[in-house]
Image 1 (cartoon, rainbow, N blue to C red):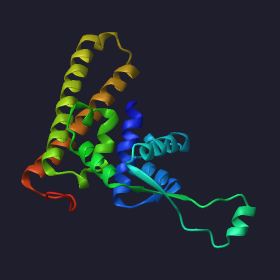
Image 2: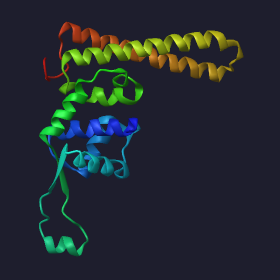
Image 3: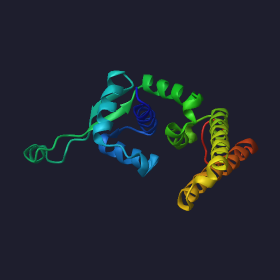
Image 4: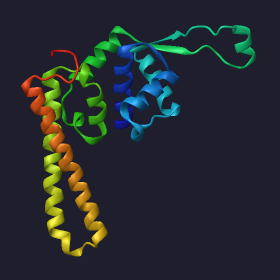
Length: 195
């Protein structure tokens, strides 16, 4: 499974844990939850849904019938399929949610994991946040060392781009420090599990 499909699987299961949805609604919620930089097409979403159904983690149910079934069939429209999380799907999502390995705090997965922090236990949130901060601090040190070695060879614009990248990472580290402190102090962002 590719990283992107793993993120999509995680996000789909998480959203369907909240309530059953049809594909259009699910795609809209995915793009809203995970942001415009991670837009998912129907060509990506529907194969993922089919795979989740095949694994027994989702079931397909017929959506509400159109008001006038005859008019809908003449117009070429069909009833929407609603996807619902199964008990096995919920259990699988819980396992994914509890995972705190390195991929949970890498760039590709972190935003998706963070989007479901409201459903995540405090100890898991802390491990993911601390792992993310550690990874970014390592990245920042490498960026600083690289900039110190190459500063004289860079033109002004490339140098500014390097500085901008470092400032972005520094800003995220500060944000993570605030989140970690808030978690340690027991302050809740919103009500959720194990608060």
